[in-house]
Amino acid sequence: MKYRTFKKTGQEVSLLGFGTMRLPVMANDSNKIEEEKAIQMIRNAIDKGINYVDTAYMYHNGESEVVVGKALKDGYREKVLLADKMPAWMAKDESDIERIFNEQLERLDVDCIDMYLVHNVTSPIWKKVEEFNVINFLEKKKAEGKIKHIGFSFHDELSLFKKVIDSYPWDFCQIQLNYMDINFQAGIEGLKYAGKKEIPVIIMEPLKGGKLTDSLPPSVEKFWDSSEIKRTPAEWALRFVADFPEVLTILSGMHTMEQVNENIRIISKADAKSLTENEHQIIRKVSEEYNKLIKYSCTACKYCLPCPQKIDIPTIIKFYNEWFLYDGSKKTRADFKTWIPPKRVPSTCIACKACEDHCPQHLPISEIMKKASDIFE
Image 1 (cartoon, rainbow, N blue to C red):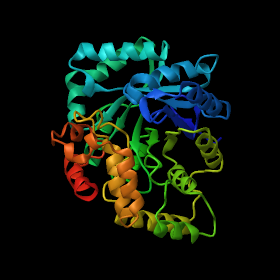
Image 2: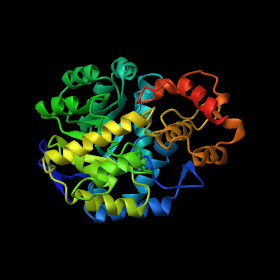
Image 3: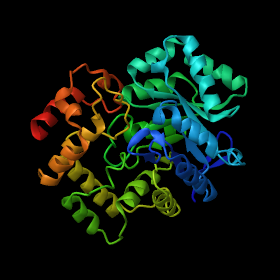
Image 4: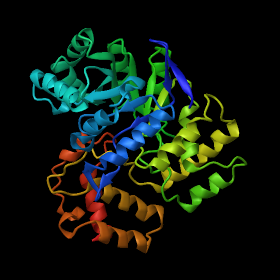
């Protein structure tokens, strides 16, 4: 395992962190984690050198925090930096902030959270953070010894990112970055901006929710095959992010033991500034090709759920993108009919746009539902 130094404390942090938004589940129900399997995966990762574990109040409808808490029993808690987040958008007033935080401690069954973030900062959420005095609350919890380090995760425009960075002496921050999103949200410019302020950066969505590794379009495969150095798609994506020295750790939402072991193998060979210019050129070509093919850049984070109409929004967007990635494949249409129940097809969308308020990618979801309906229904 490769490690990078958290300069504020001198602690060595594993370059690969374990994100728990996509733990293995039963019967495709994201609220029912395969607990034994998930615990084995997390402990295996820690045994092999991962020492950063990330969860959130809303992941798996709250079950992620519970399972992480169980995984960190038997001496594992002392081996990791535990990260959790405050979903300010779910609070109705300041008292709710306290309630949510206490509930997190209870779910995790811990007295202290090492890395605590203001979750999913966007312009409206930042207003709530200010309205409910969230930062003051976190400073109070830090003084009480219930939080060690204060940070934020971000999903909005670069200008807001810089404003938030400059608003407080953050211990760290978390942004979305992969070779498809170099100019999206905070992007590389935001990464460098935080770096100049000596604020370490945690990376999320390095594989874009698995989109950069699953079912590659033939045109993308040709670019990877053209490289003299042969790597898996996951290796290319993780190595791209690891190449930036400003990155402290890279979160991967692993849902199989094979993914845990493979990602550890990849990161064990990743150093900052180790990719050649030719390798960066190949990555740029792949990014350009994907951008030509992918219509909507959904990461399947599921922040849009639950839908009032019970529509599985991320799955429908996945099928819509696949329709264009694979030239209108009959298999895509067949898969749509197999996995989307008749009562939950995109045409049942009532365009309430509740989902759009929570989408970190700011996708026009109601518009996409109409387009998907035109194709698949």
